[in-house]
Image (cartoon, rainbow, N blue to C red):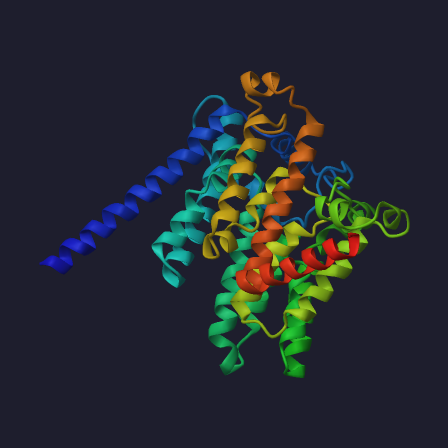
Length: 379
């Protein structure tokens, strides 16, 4: 009887978490939307009219997302204000992705970790207001690694690699991760599969649009977001950027990091990848802060709490976010202010990453030694 009560109690707790998380995402969607939604709406019009959405230069992904948008748009709901209904369908779709991530964390880790992810204000804001779809790529990557770890001993890795390939199609957040897996895997035939399967799926996804190849190369493969990478601004000399752009620095560094971490556990390197892909990125925008949330939930400490609080400040003040006038006008907040705040956000995420990677004791003992040697040298 007691066991049944506990089970029933757990179900009510779980239901309350889901209801609150889902309601929060739908509620915050009522405060407006990001510029991205306007672009997707226009891209969808081009797609529905048989015109090139790649030529519009505001679509920088594989075709999968535009097909998802088309599918959501085709779901008929007989209500007025079709634009609001269409956006609500996107919010619900992205919320379902968050719910699936929550259940994956619940099953493989704990309710606490799932809770930290699902009720994290960053996740709520990006899904409900910003409507970016990074969570779909993260979920598929997570499922791929869970399956890979489970089936690797039996040699059944094709399905996980297919999922990883679909993750690349959803959004190319995981683009360098097959290289990390390649470094980790010792079996030569598996190494080849790790590179061939995911990248083949990604490149084949563009096959129906080969008549737009020039636009695809320019707006997907050669696309450069804002060149504002805070890590590179803080830790590399300015003159270096005149010879090597930040995107190249980022790509080289991420590949080297994957080689250095090859002896870590599989799920561990996946989580470290999610953190590093944001910390060392050559460009940062608000939606990027949702990418490492699985890792942050699992490795949770007070640095990640500060990271979350700083991100919330950006979401409240930034012109591409909630932009609450009372606060933004009082602080005279503008785009430059947001770009400045990105630096402490990335810095605190870097500290959390290094603690996770090296351990607190090792990290701070070595930092203390470096500080003492620097002080002695200056003296």
